Image (tube, rainbow, N blue to C red):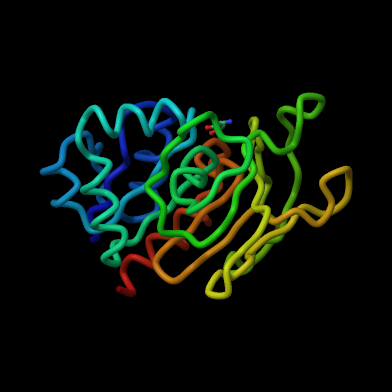
Length: 198
Ligand code: GLN
């Protein structure tokens, strides 16, 4: 059983811990550099990316996370976590730092004020069966991707038709939405399999 950490500085940490355990991993909260070193993989939760990155600096885990993720440790980010994995941000706050590693540009709060939060069914490559019921909460979308990035899901229909909302680049997985909130374990299961395969 792989040991997967959830960065536990802010955000929906408990939901990810629960989903990972249910998907067959050992899940542990991560707040310290020594904990970053101890896990096989890491989940960056939904929450507020600016707060999480500031706290990561304060708790001295920003550099350790960059080193481990840069060195091939698998990571999965949902929503704010996707922003934290991204190499580039549009509409970030002044000086907003990320962990990076994922060769994408994300647009923060991309879906706009009027549709701040919404739910939609999206087909996700690598997730067999029915579409995933995706919950978007002031979510980012992926504005541009580098060559090595696979696009796993796009929004179908509505004002955001065609926007990329799930990506994978080797050991890195990111979704604009929050599978940890719906009880559908398939995205976490995909990540656990990815971790086991490495
Ligand atoms: N808008 C948030 C941010 O920029 C992300 C929201 C979320 O994780 N649900 O970090």
